[in-house]
Length: 255
View 1 (cartoon, rainbow, N blue to C red):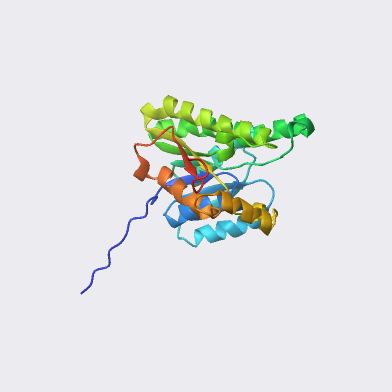
View 2: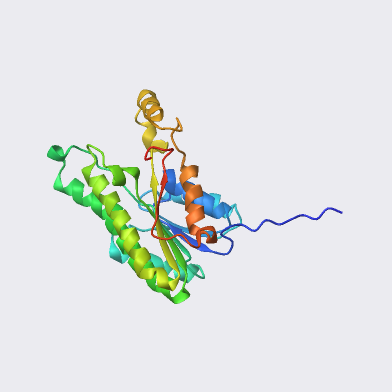
């Protein structure tokens, strides 16, 4: 008689929050976390229909999943979200700060509003969410925070000074939080995706995408799943001795 070996999922019984999870990398991360057994609370800002469809998709993995309309760039929203999630879920073990936008332009044409908004959504949201969740994680004496940065935050990019500055800030913030919270068994790491092919990059056109692929040592763009796999590693106990690090998921763009 053959016995069936049950493989323990990496995030079984854990609860994760993912900000900005209705498309691209955020959606890929939410799906992969659910696949690995995590209960998932995720946020959206505008598309309720999309959010509810993703909620169903995640629940199909046999986990608890709930969509919350919340703008992480507002401190009040971040604090209310943590309260709501704690009311619906038993714990908050993982926070994935994924929400982000671009408003690209050369510096001479960039408006102050476009600079400020990118900093608010990409950087201040991470401060807001981390500050809001830290009390819960300190009480639990455990937690993993994963912040999405970008290769652009490491090497810069013409026409993206606002985006690059926000994403570089994420790396500095991540290192500082790792030092502050490490003694309480709370880890904080960043992921720096490279050229990831999503709905957003499709707008660039096939020729531009081909050019990009040729500059990458692995000769392909990444997928949301590539970033999601790295997120699972950093969220799980597989990386129990990893904190304050930036993991480049970029096909060798930064070597």
